[in-house]
Figure 1 (cartoon, rainbow, N blue to C red):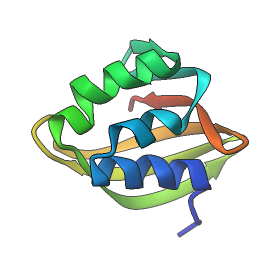
Figure 2: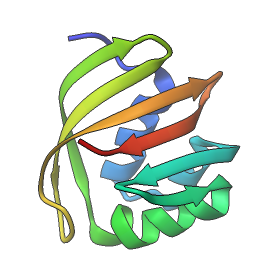
Figure 3: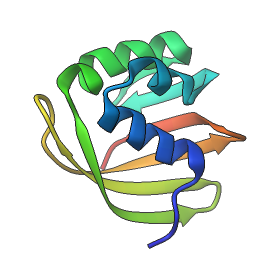
Length: 106
């Protein structure tokens, strides 16, 4: 398995630790999060998505597969918690030490 870039590893780790402030800090100021067409922008958007769909639902991620696709990282995770449960790919674009773009879709 390919190693995760540090910001993506932080996304996983902060979610699993339930650390909302550190989770939001993983994203760039102008981040774009797309969860099946629901779009969230910037730190406020990351905070909102986190509350409604991630740490707010006590999500826990187990990484199943990591692949690089050009400038993107595709991370397949198994999610458990009080919201979505199952396996899903998440596409990440990293800008330095933060995530600038995240897409959850088939």
